[in-house]
Image 1 (cartoon, helix red, strand yellow):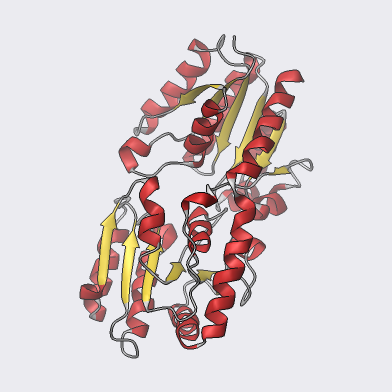
Image 2 (cartoon, helix red, strand yellow; image 1 turned 180 degrees about the horizontal axis):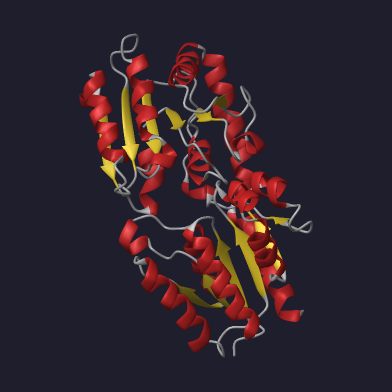
Length: 345
């Protein structure tokens, strides 16, 4: 068995969704650094995914020393419970990594389940200060280790006088409120008739895409919207750079990699102030933070960026400097130290 070998239990679905997850990126970087990595699961079907996770844990048990298990709320929490229980039976050291803006509310309604699961991890970590704050009562030693990006892949352009080209980067799902971005555009189009909105991301088939497009037609801005569909991770910097202002309209947020990517590119950020966002970004210093679902306030913030060049420049520069602290060069060694510590425990 390779001394540096690890099983990663999470969502490895980029071949189906076109979007690479955090654990996929981590797995690839660990492999490039000489780790033997075993991944599960690549299956889209929920039942097939769970079966594959349990099978992989058992079948490859002689090939990995430690395990990394992602924990989300909702039905996915059951997968974490079952996989962690099996890993415990096999006496495999494991780190549980908490994700998802809904996990705090889920924990409040399922205290015994959450306490039991988190107690089974030799280590528990999260990339979210929001989650750490909300879940520390279950695990006082909860570690904070943020998500990372490759800052060198993002060309920075300072936005002193931005154009009204808005970028929205998210899956079309009700959690991310794509129709809010459409309404923001509609609020701006009268004053800025050349305003456009580029919407980047896959359709999660919950009706959000159809609702957003219907809203665009109702408000008369359909012709001012470009929808790309899913794109490869490598294409994100190029697409973000096509715009000058970034809209983040989510209702829940446990980190916000897309916001980080926009900051690295130099786009001033206008975001709902939910979940992790106010923990990472400061209003009028690194981003414009807006109450959830308030399209008029969000449009007003965009208007200020378009009309106040000093504000646009400050947001653009400060956000880039903040985002550089999340580069993989600093984050990956921290992960490796945690895994090596687990192996030696």
